Length: 387
Image (cartoon, rainbow, N blue to C red):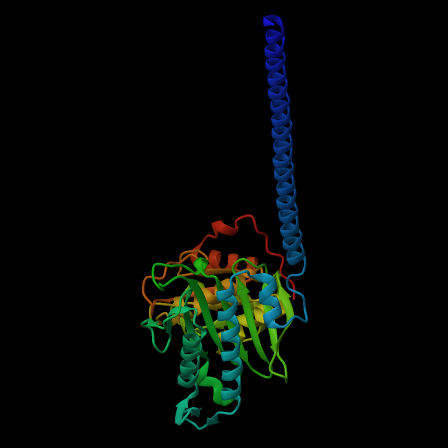
Protein backbone atom coordinates (compact mmCIF):
# COMPACT_ATOMS: atom_id res chain seq x y z
CA UNK A 1 0.00 0.00 0.00
CA UNK A 2 2.83 2.35 0.88
CA UNK A 3 4.69 1.44 -2.36
CA UNK A 4 1.65 2.26 -4.43
CA UNK A 5 1.30 5.66 -2.73
CA UNK A 6 5.03 6.38 -3.33
CA UNK A 7 4.77 5.55 -7.05
CA UNK A 8 1.77 7.91 -7.38
CA UNK A 9 3.64 10.71 -5.63
CA UNK A 10 6.71 10.21 -7.84
CA UNK A 11 4.54 10.20 -10.96
CA UNK A 12 2.85 13.43 -9.82
CA UNK A 13 6.19 15.17 -9.25
CA UNK A 14 7.51 13.96 -12.63
CA UNK A 15 4.41 15.34 -14.40
CA UNK A 16 4.80 18.63 -12.53
CA UNK A 17 8.46 19.01 -13.66
CA UNK A 18 7.50 18.04 -17.19
CA UNK A 19 4.75 20.65 -17.21
CA UNK A 20 7.16 23.29 -15.89
CA UNK A 21 9.64 22.29 -18.59
CA UNK A 22 7.04 22.71 -21.29
CA UNK A 23 6.09 26.10 -19.85
CA UNK A 24 9.74 27.25 -19.74
CA UNK A 25 10.30 26.08 -23.31
CA UNK A 26 7.18 27.91 -24.40
CA UNK A 27 8.37 31.05 -22.62
CA UNK A 28 11.78 30.76 -24.29
CA UNK A 29 10.16 30.40 -27.70
CA UNK A 30 7.93 33.38 -26.98
CA UNK A 31 10.93 35.47 -25.90
CA UNK A 32 12.80 34.43 -29.02
CA UNK A 33 9.82 35.37 -31.17
CA UNK A 34 9.55 38.69 -29.36
CA UNK A 35 13.27 39.39 -29.80
CA UNK A 36 13.04 38.42 -33.43
CA UNK A 37 10.01 40.63 -33.91
CA UNK A 38 11.75 43.57 -32.15
CA UNK A 39 14.87 43.07 -34.24
CA UNK A 40 12.76 42.83 -37.35
CA UNK A 41 10.95 46.04 -36.44
CA UNK A 42 14.26 47.78 -35.71
CA UNK A 43 15.68 46.67 -39.06
CA UNK A 44 12.49 47.78 -40.77
CA UNK A 45 12.68 51.18 -39.08
CA UNK A 46 16.33 51.50 -40.04
CA UNK A 47 15.40 50.63 -43.59
CA UNK A 48 12.70 53.29 -43.63
CA UNK A 49 15.13 55.86 -42.17
CA UNK A 50 17.69 55.02 -44.84
CA UNK A 51 15.02 55.30 -47.51
CA UNK A 52 13.97 58.68 -46.12
CA UNK A 53 17.56 59.91 -46.12
CA UNK A 54 18.06 58.62 -49.63
CA UNK A 55 14.85 60.33 -50.69
CA UNK A 56 15.99 63.61 -49.13
CA UNK A 57 19.38 63.32 -50.83
CA UNK A 58 17.70 62.60 -54.16
CA UNK A 59 15.46 65.64 -53.71
CA UNK A 60 18.49 67.74 -52.76
CA UNK A 61 20.42 66.58 -55.81
CA UNK A 62 17.39 67.19 -58.01
CA UNK A 63 17.03 70.63 -56.50
CA UNK A 64 20.68 71.46 -57.15
CA UNK A 65 20.38 70.25 -60.73
CA UNK A 66 17.22 72.32 -61.26
CA UNK A 67 18.66 75.58 -59.97
CA UNK A 68 18.78 78.77 -62.02
CA UNK A 69 16.76 77.67 -65.01
CA UNK A 70 16.13 80.41 -67.56
CA UNK A 71 12.37 80.90 -67.91
CA UNK A 72 11.56 80.37 -64.22
CA UNK A 73 9.40 82.94 -62.49
CA UNK A 74 10.94 84.77 -59.55
CA UNK A 75 8.87 82.66 -57.16
CA UNK A 76 9.98 79.39 -58.80
CA UNK A 77 13.61 80.47 -58.70
CA UNK A 78 13.46 81.29 -54.99
CA UNK A 79 11.73 78.00 -54.17
CA UNK A 80 14.56 76.11 -55.87
CA UNK A 81 17.42 78.14 -54.47
CA UNK A 82 16.67 78.85 -50.83
CA UNK A 83 14.92 76.88 -48.10
CA UNK A 84 14.53 80.04 -46.00
CA UNK A 85 10.85 80.91 -46.26
CA UNK A 86 11.38 84.36 -44.74
CA UNK A 87 14.10 85.21 -47.25
CA UNK A 88 11.81 84.08 -50.07
CA UNK A 89 9.07 86.33 -48.73
CA UNK A 90 11.39 89.30 -48.44
CA UNK A 91 12.83 88.97 -51.96
CA UNK A 92 9.35 88.51 -53.45
CA UNK A 93 8.07 91.57 -51.56
CA UNK A 94 10.98 93.67 -52.77
CA UNK A 95 10.30 92.47 -56.31
CA UNK A 96 6.77 93.87 -55.96
CA UNK A 97 8.24 97.17 -54.75
CA UNK A 98 10.60 97.29 -57.75
CA UNK A 99 7.63 96.82 -60.08
CA UNK A 100 5.69 99.63 -58.37
CA UNK A 101 8.64 102.03 -58.39
CA UNK A 102 9.26 101.29 -62.08
CA UNK A 103 5.71 102.45 -62.85
CA UNK A 104 6.04 105.57 -60.69
CA UNK A 105 9.33 106.54 -62.36
CA UNK A 106 7.93 105.89 -65.83
CA UNK A 107 4.89 108.10 -65.18
CA UNK A 108 6.61 110.89 -63.19
CA UNK A 109 6.11 114.51 -64.17
CA UNK A 110 9.47 116.22 -64.53
CA UNK A 111 10.37 119.90 -64.51
CA UNK A 112 13.76 121.61 -64.54
CA UNK A 113 14.03 121.15 -60.77
CA UNK A 114 12.29 117.89 -59.86
CA UNK A 115 10.38 114.79 -60.97
CA UNK A 116 7.23 114.12 -58.94
CA UNK A 117 4.44 111.56 -58.73
CA UNK A 118 1.55 110.71 -56.45
CA UNK A 119 1.70 108.62 -53.29
CA UNK A 120 -1.87 108.39 -52.08
CA UNK A 121 -2.94 112.02 -51.69
CA UNK A 122 0.64 113.32 -51.62
CA UNK A 123 2.76 114.64 -54.46
CA UNK A 124 6.37 113.64 -53.84
CA UNK A 125 9.72 113.73 -55.57
CA UNK A 126 10.25 110.27 -57.05
CA UNK A 127 13.20 109.42 -54.78
CA UNK A 128 11.13 110.16 -51.64
CA UNK A 129 8.19 108.29 -53.13
CA UNK A 130 10.41 105.25 -53.77
CA UNK A 131 11.65 105.52 -50.18
CA UNK A 132 8.10 105.39 -48.81
CA UNK A 133 7.15 102.44 -51.04
CA UNK A 134 10.15 100.40 -49.85
CA UNK A 135 9.59 101.10 -46.14
CA UNK A 136 5.92 100.15 -46.44
CA UNK A 137 6.77 97.01 -48.41
CA UNK A 138 9.27 95.87 -45.80
CA UNK A 139 6.85 96.59 -42.95
CA UNK A 140 4.05 94.56 -44.49
CA UNK A 141 6.37 91.68 -45.45
CA UNK A 142 6.43 90.65 -41.77
CA UNK A 143 10.04 89.46 -42.01
CA UNK A 144 11.98 92.73 -41.58
CA UNK A 145 13.20 93.78 -38.15
CA UNK A 146 15.13 96.95 -39.02
CA UNK A 147 15.40 99.06 -42.16
CA UNK A 148 17.24 102.22 -43.10
CA UNK A 149 17.86 104.10 -46.31
CA UNK A 150 20.00 106.79 -47.84
CA UNK A 151 17.08 109.15 -47.17
CA UNK A 152 16.48 107.87 -43.60
CA UNK A 153 19.89 106.60 -42.42
CA UNK A 154 18.86 105.84 -38.83
CA UNK A 155 17.21 102.38 -38.69
CA UNK A 156 13.47 102.11 -38.11
CA UNK A 157 11.89 99.15 -36.29
CA UNK A 158 9.38 97.52 -38.64
CA UNK A 159 7.97 94.83 -36.35
CA UNK A 160 8.98 91.74 -38.32
CA UNK A 161 11.44 88.98 -37.52
CA UNK A 162 14.24 87.55 -39.63
CA UNK A 163 16.22 90.21 -41.49
CA UNK A 164 17.37 93.82 -41.62
CA UNK A 165 17.53 95.76 -44.87
CA UNK A 166 19.49 98.82 -46.03
CA UNK A 167 18.66 100.48 -49.34
CA UNK A 168 19.21 103.36 -51.72
CA UNK A 169 15.64 103.96 -52.91
CA UNK A 170 16.44 105.63 -56.23
CA UNK A 171 20.09 105.89 -57.17
CA UNK A 172 20.50 108.43 -59.99
CA UNK A 173 17.33 110.34 -59.15
CA UNK A 174 18.93 113.55 -60.43
CA UNK A 175 19.02 112.11 -63.98
CA UNK A 176 15.44 110.81 -64.10
CA UNK A 177 14.41 113.88 -66.11
CA UNK A 178 16.99 113.05 -68.81
CA UNK A 179 15.40 109.59 -69.20
CA UNK A 180 18.61 107.75 -68.33
CA UNK A 181 18.36 104.44 -66.49
CA UNK A 182 18.16 104.71 -62.69
CA UNK A 183 17.70 102.10 -60.01
CA UNK A 184 17.11 100.79 -56.49
CA UNK A 185 19.89 99.07 -54.51
CA UNK A 186 19.43 97.02 -51.34
CA UNK A 187 21.25 94.58 -49.09
CA UNK A 188 19.71 92.01 -46.73
CA UNK A 189 21.37 91.05 -43.45
CA UNK A 190 20.17 88.31 -41.06
CA UNK A 191 19.10 89.42 -37.60
CA UNK A 192 18.45 92.81 -36.11
CA UNK A 193 21.47 95.06 -36.59
CA UNK A 194 22.97 97.18 -39.36
CA UNK A 195 26.31 98.14 -37.80
CA UNK A 196 29.19 95.91 -36.76
CA UNK A 197 28.55 93.90 -39.93
CA UNK A 198 30.24 93.47 -43.30
CA UNK A 199 28.95 92.92 -46.80
CA UNK A 200 30.02 89.32 -46.54
CA UNK A 201 27.37 88.80 -43.85
CA UNK A 202 24.58 89.56 -46.33
CA UNK A 203 21.98 86.88 -47.00
CA UNK A 204 21.12 88.54 -50.31
CA UNK A 205 21.49 91.72 -52.34
CA UNK A 206 19.71 93.13 -55.36
CA UNK A 207 19.12 96.08 -57.60
CA UNK A 208 16.12 97.16 -59.61
CA UNK A 209 17.04 98.78 -62.92
CA UNK A 210 14.49 101.18 -64.42
CA UNK A 211 15.28 101.81 -68.07
CA UNK A 212 13.85 100.73 -71.42
CA UNK A 213 13.43 97.40 -69.60
CA UNK A 214 12.68 96.86 -65.92
CA UNK A 215 15.12 94.36 -64.46
CA UNK A 216 15.42 92.83 -60.98
CA UNK A 217 19.02 91.65 -60.57
CA UNK A 218 19.74 89.61 -57.44
CA UNK A 219 22.26 87.38 -55.70
CA UNK A 220 21.76 84.99 -52.79
CA UNK A 221 24.63 84.18 -50.45
CA UNK A 222 24.18 80.40 -50.72
CA UNK A 223 23.32 80.29 -54.44
CA UNK A 224 25.92 80.48 -57.22
CA UNK A 225 25.83 83.30 -59.73
CA UNK A 226 24.10 86.63 -60.19
CA UNK A 227 20.61 86.42 -61.69
CA UNK A 228 18.64 88.76 -63.92
CA UNK A 229 14.82 88.82 -63.96
CA UNK A 230 12.91 90.76 -66.60
CA UNK A 231 9.51 92.31 -65.88
CA UNK A 232 6.88 91.02 -68.30
CA UNK A 233 3.67 92.69 -69.49
CA UNK A 234 1.64 90.46 -67.16
CA UNK A 235 3.57 91.75 -64.14
CA UNK A 236 5.72 88.65 -63.59
CA UNK A 237 9.50 88.63 -63.28
CA UNK A 238 11.06 85.95 -65.50
CA UNK A 239 14.60 84.63 -65.12
CA UNK A 240 16.46 85.60 -68.29
CA UNK A 241 20.18 85.41 -67.43
CA UNK A 242 22.67 83.94 -64.98
CA UNK A 243 26.16 85.44 -64.80
CA UNK A 244 29.01 83.47 -63.25
CA UNK A 245 32.08 84.97 -64.95
CA UNK A 246 33.33 88.50 -65.60
CA UNK A 247 35.99 88.26 -68.31
CA UNK A 248 38.66 90.80 -69.27
CA UNK A 249 37.51 93.43 -71.76
CA UNK A 250 38.08 97.07 -72.70
CA UNK A 251 35.13 98.95 -71.21
CA UNK A 252 35.44 101.56 -68.44
CA UNK A 253 33.18 103.77 -66.31
CA UNK A 254 35.28 106.35 -64.46
CA UNK A 255 33.31 108.03 -61.68
CA UNK A 256 34.36 111.27 -59.96
CA UNK A 257 36.75 112.34 -62.72
CA UNK A 258 37.33 115.60 -60.82
CA UNK A 259 39.60 113.57 -58.54
CA UNK A 260 42.13 113.23 -61.39
CA UNK A 261 43.02 116.91 -60.85
CA UNK A 262 44.88 116.18 -57.59
CA UNK A 263 45.08 112.39 -57.52
CA UNK A 264 47.90 111.65 -59.97
CA UNK A 265 47.57 107.88 -59.62
CA UNK A 266 43.91 108.03 -60.64
CA UNK A 267 44.81 110.30 -63.53
CA UNK A 268 47.41 107.75 -64.62
CA UNK A 269 44.85 104.93 -64.55
CA UNK A 270 42.28 106.92 -66.57
CA UNK A 271 44.95 107.81 -69.11
CA UNK A 272 45.89 104.13 -69.38
CA UNK A 273 42.30 103.28 -70.28
CA UNK A 274 42.17 106.06 -72.88
CA UNK A 275 45.60 105.32 -74.36
CA UNK A 276 44.70 101.64 -74.72
CA UNK A 277 41.45 102.49 -76.51
CA UNK A 278 38.99 101.28 -73.93
CA UNK A 279 35.34 102.02 -74.70
CA UNK A 280 33.86 104.68 -72.42
CA UNK A 281 30.44 103.70 -71.04
CA UNK A 282 29.43 106.10 -68.28
CA UNK A 283 25.99 107.55 -67.47
CA UNK A 284 26.54 109.07 -64.03
CA UNK A 285 24.14 106.54 -62.50
CA UNK A 286 25.85 103.90 -60.39
CA UNK A 287 23.19 101.25 -61.03
CA UNK A 288 23.44 101.17 -64.86
CA UNK A 289 27.21 101.70 -64.79
CA UNK A 290 27.75 98.68 -62.54
CA UNK A 291 24.93 96.62 -64.04
CA UNK A 292 26.53 96.78 -67.48
CA UNK A 293 29.60 94.95 -66.10
CA UNK A 294 27.33 92.04 -65.15
CA UNK A 295 25.36 92.12 -68.42
CA UNK A 296 28.35 92.55 -70.75
CA UNK A 297 30.48 90.26 -68.54
CA UNK A 298 33.47 92.60 -68.77
CA UNK A 299 34.66 96.06 -67.81
CA UNK A 300 35.50 98.21 -64.80
CA UNK A 301 33.78 100.89 -62.70
CA UNK A 302 35.69 103.23 -60.38
CA UNK A 303 34.87 106.04 -57.97
CA UNK A 304 37.96 107.43 -56.29
CA UNK A 305 38.58 110.32 -53.90
CA UNK A 306 41.33 112.94 -53.76
CA UNK A 307 42.48 115.66 -51.33
CA UNK A 308 39.80 118.03 -52.69
CA UNK A 309 37.00 115.55 -53.45
CA UNK A 310 35.28 113.69 -50.62
CA UNK A 311 33.86 110.19 -50.70
CA UNK A 312 30.17 110.15 -51.60
CA UNK A 313 29.28 106.48 -51.95
CA UNK A 314 27.71 104.85 -48.92
CA UNK A 315 29.08 101.50 -47.81
CA UNK A 316 25.84 100.17 -46.31
CA UNK A 317 23.31 101.35 -48.90
CA UNK A 318 25.27 101.01 -52.15
CA UNK A 319 28.81 99.67 -52.03
CA UNK A 320 28.37 96.44 -50.02
CA UNK A 321 25.20 95.26 -51.84
CA UNK A 322 26.71 95.91 -55.28
CA UNK A 323 29.92 94.16 -54.20
CA UNK A 324 27.93 90.99 -53.49
CA UNK A 325 26.25 91.19 -56.91
CA UNK A 326 29.52 91.74 -58.81
CA UNK A 327 31.50 89.10 -56.92
CA UNK A 328 28.72 86.52 -57.22
CA UNK A 329 28.82 87.25 -60.96
CA UNK A 330 32.49 86.28 -61.01
CA UNK A 331 34.03 89.75 -60.69
CA UNK A 332 35.97 91.49 -57.94
CA UNK A 333 35.95 94.72 -55.92
CA UNK A 334 38.47 96.94 -54.15
CA UNK A 335 37.21 99.18 -51.36
CA UNK A 336 38.19 101.95 -48.97
CA UNK A 337 41.73 102.38 -50.30
CA UNK A 338 42.77 99.22 -48.43
CA UNK A 339 43.14 96.67 -51.26
CA UNK A 340 40.30 94.63 -49.78
CA UNK A 341 36.96 93.47 -51.11
CA UNK A 342 33.93 95.69 -50.66
CA UNK A 343 32.49 92.73 -48.75
CA UNK A 344 35.17 92.91 -46.05
CA UNK A 345 34.95 96.51 -44.84
CA UNK A 346 33.10 96.76 -41.53
CA UNK A 347 30.06 99.02 -41.34
CA UNK A 348 30.72 101.21 -38.30
CA UNK A 349 28.21 103.96 -39.09
CA UNK A 350 25.04 103.80 -41.14
CA UNK A 351 26.07 106.76 -43.28
CA UNK A 352 29.70 105.63 -43.71
CA UNK A 353 31.26 106.80 -47.02
CA UNK A 354 33.96 105.10 -49.06
CA UNK A 355 35.59 104.68 -52.48
CA UNK A 356 35.27 101.63 -54.71
CA UNK A 357 36.29 99.78 -57.83
CA UNK A 358 34.24 96.96 -59.40
CA UNK A 359 35.14 94.87 -62.41
CA UNK A 360 36.94 91.84 -63.70
CA UNK A 361 39.69 90.43 -61.51
CA UNK A 362 42.36 91.68 -63.91
CA UNK A 363 40.99 95.22 -63.95
CA UNK A 364 40.65 95.37 -60.16
CA UNK A 365 44.24 94.15 -59.90
CA UNK A 366 45.35 96.94 -62.28
CA UNK A 367 43.36 99.47 -60.21
CA UNK A 368 45.11 98.46 -56.97
CA UNK A 369 48.58 98.31 -58.50
CA UNK A 370 48.19 101.75 -60.13
CA UNK A 371 46.65 103.55 -57.17
CA UNK A 372 48.30 101.77 -54.25
CA UNK A 373 51.43 100.19 -55.76
CA UNK A 374 50.46 96.60 -54.96
CA UNK A 375 47.74 93.99 -55.30
CA UNK A 376 48.74 91.07 -53.12
CA UNK A 377 45.31 89.41 -53.36
CA UNK A 378 45.66 89.00 -57.11
CA UNK A 379 49.43 88.54 -57.39
CA UNK A 380 49.00 85.32 -59.40
CA UNK A 381 46.57 86.87 -61.90
CA UNK A 382 47.89 87.81 -65.34
CA UNK A 383 45.70 90.27 -67.23
CA UNK A 384 44.78 89.31 -70.77
CA UNK A 385 42.64 92.20 -71.93
CA UNK A 386 40.97 92.21 -75.33
CA UNK A 387 38.29 94.39 -76.85
